Image (cartoon, rainbow, N blue to C red; front, side):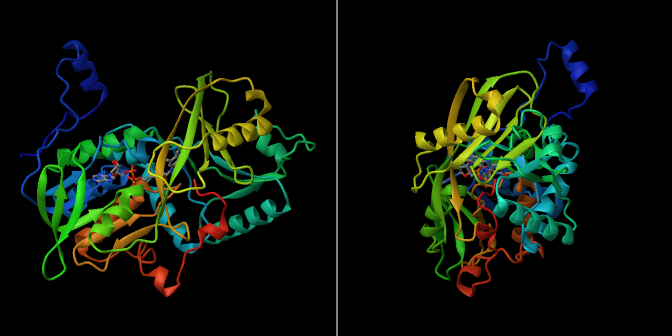
Length: 422
Ligand SMILES: Cc1cc2nc3c(=O)[nH]c(=O)nc-3n(C[C@H](O)[C@H](O)[C@H](O)COP(=O)(O)OP(=O)(O)OC[C@H]3O[C@@H](n4cnc5c(N)ncnc54)[C@H](O)[C@@H]3O)c2cc1C
């Protein structure tokens, strides 16, 4: 199929379309029919998979690529998350990885000619007790050594940045201060998937939706030969699995056992109100995080259920716990109505760090284990996955994020470093 060239979005295009009654807009991407064979197949049309296809085409000239999804593109965790973007992780490896992503977020709207609404509104992580203060300070020092911006702010400074915050010292969860990354923020999740899809399709990538991949096939020499799908076998010498909570099932079909557990993670939104919440606030201790969308809804994140599941919905007790915590920290919101809640299936590794690289199967690559915090990594992970697939070797930045670290013991233990990884 020839490459699809959508019009470039600009004020001029908008004006010209207005004169034509907006009847001439082209589809952002065509719904492709699968070919018999591709150079590369990416399983999973989330932000990571679509982004990898985009960078494969743009930076490596590999355009005979299919991105295959069992549902609609962006319908997985990419379209279900609370969009917190930050890079103040503890370990050197993580700091490099997430800062690489943050650098790419900066110019992403221009790069894709698509407004991903990246907003550097600042993320603060509250400290409620002495342990929180010590842990936050440790993160801040480590981040600064890595050139990542993160600073300690007092409770009063936190209140100045975020007026609805309750800093009454008699509160059940008193605010003793916060770690604050000013460069961090949020973006519009759907737009990230749509922007990458449009950019990839424009360069000739096939995006195949509503086509579950049922198994990964290997040849007699053990190397990948392609994937079985609901629309039959599709051949490829390189397959990259980027299927978040469903990765372990797919990898199992190729004979690769993954150190992953899949849990529902929930979020909810309130009724829309006028702008009242100018930043993002996270509280790891009470496990709640909150921001305000451009539509005006308060976007509230909860925790993972205690049990593994593929149900894409979570238990009510967690939501109740989260809302109770939000009301304690922001009493001003206690009479707001909640509009809807949902869940996504997150893929959690034992050390809460991603796996991005080669596998023991020749031609098979994997990008997973982003768990509760992979949206922020989207451009970085996509960029690095494309590099790894194109060259057959990991980039320096993702080289430590191997599958083998769970046998060699070289873990990147963000699990112990932070109770929450959003
Ligand atoms: C409620 C919630 C809140 C979150 N909050 C944050 C946050 O604030 N900040 C942050 O950084 N991260 C957050 N995350 C995590 C983040 O959403 C994910 O880590 C990230 O979006 C993963 O992107 P992805 O492209 O790898 O996966 P996905 O977007 O899930 O894409 C994987 C795709 O694979 C497809 N797929 C699965 N199985 C198959 C198959 N057999 N065949 C074909 N296709 C298949 C799925 O349909 C899906 O579209 C949150 C997640 C949730 C659920």
